[in-house]
Image (cartoon, rainbow, N blue to C red):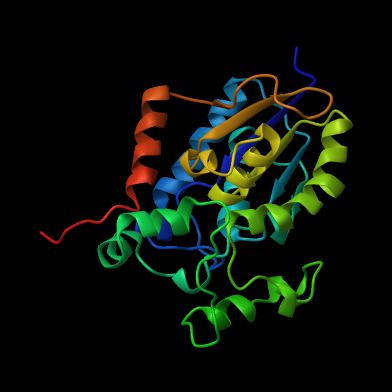
Length: 258
């Protein structure tokens, strides 16, 4: 029997998810479909009897908005929400704002897959000439971080996401789980993938094939050492989940002009 349950959630579809662009640290709200995904997720978790004690999010609006909508659908709006930049999406550097399918045409699908899904390859760094540089680094939220703004990343591999996430996981999230609290982490595709890699011991190669669709809760049952007792479970209609996974995987494929 499991000692602890943990739910990971990639936020609902954002406006740039819909446009197939690298969103990363640009702050985008949920699309209309993303709002519905978050509400549906909350209803599903309520039906399954979940009662959360604590929610963790990034400091990006789409992660926070998703958590709010989930809790509202569950009639659990009072549950505390803790925000940290360490749960932010992976920083895609100079790729931010670019369309994945157009990049696949220019650079090849394998190169784009490496940038998107590999473990230890860092994309080109963002610099001050980038159109979204000032929007990101002049944002007041980044003055609230536990590191100076000049030390925040300019691009990250998935490995670097895990490196900046683990201190928060160990110092802040783990003690709450070990106190018996039921925790929801409403974050992003890559921060959730990084955490899954850590918890499940996924290899550097196999993590490239771990795909998390937007708005689909991932249930983990953990023992007293926070090791999984069984494979992760994506909750909901399995046919719809498989279709959503394929949609995410297809985002990095070239689309020829018609």
